[in-house]
Length: 218
Ligand SMILES: [Zn+2]
Image 1 (cartoon, rainbow, N blue to C red):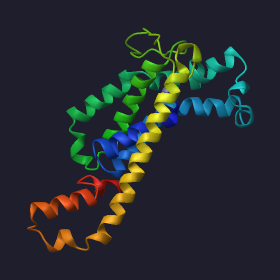
Image 2 (cartoon, rainbow, N blue to C red; image 1 turned 60 degrees about the vertical axis):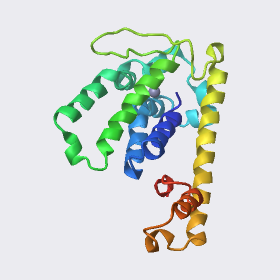
Image 3 (tube, protein in one colour; image 1 turned 90 degrees about the vertical axis):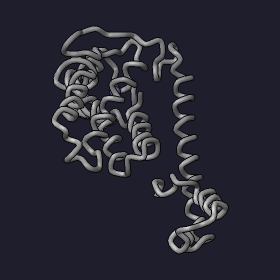
């Protein structure tokens, strides 16, 4: 998938889905970006500013694409980071060494989860530009029936669905935020001053404030 899609969905899941907090959301987005950094560096190194002007057409040869995405210093690093093996090993270390005790805000955990999610999402959305998911254990590669961009393999439909979903999530979060902001004016200090509220008041409070999830959207 596009790097920004990886980052967005991981952020939304960590911060608003699991409600792991703001720091976890940011860490998840950074982790989800991480496997694509070598290809950014490779593009900057081999193509430079021409990429900004010409986009994909600046990557004119197979050799160039290979050096950026698959082999050589940039491509090999990127391929290694797109394997699930290194990140799963790190997640096991995290568990075995009980690193969670030193990771109260779940920053390292969500960095690793974002990275892991990226490897799986790319595994499921690449057709003729696959990478070995189980490197260095195995060189096995799998060609998905769905490409995140190639129109020959439902790329347009995938783009519409994934970007539609992102728009929907953004709209929902904005809606919740607007509704949640208005509530304190309508009910000043209600929560603090009336700890023993009637169920009717609690319901009114909850609905006006966007429910118990509201505080996380700030
Ligand atoms: Zn990727």
